[in-house]
Length: 146
Image (cartoon, rainbow, N blue to C red):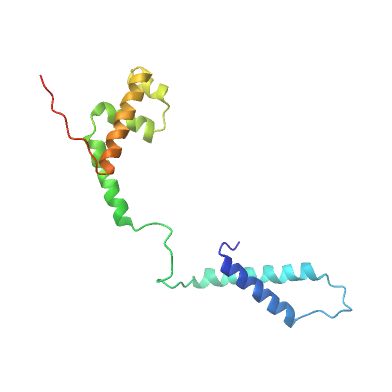
């Protein structure tokens, strides 16, 4: 139930404090281990209910965010979408079918009516171009000579 090591240590310490305050008499037939686990369980449930009711307070300076701030992600997502739009149609189609839709190469080839080697080639070129754009090392556009 507890994922934080410090919370677990605190729970065990509170359990021991409570147990030492209510030690059974030596003449009682109480099994100590199950008794301690019962105290531990009851304390854990009480803490969970308290946290659920009141919420958990944390110091904003010491919290480690599990996800990065959304600003960088939204910029990267915008750049990726623009990179997808800038790809040639042939590469974009294959990249979306394989990368987004999860089709296998032969399935994408059947959908597009292309040989599997062509699908693999277009996918490789599309990935390379998108990766280069995202890393800021785009290749200069070649001009067509007629």
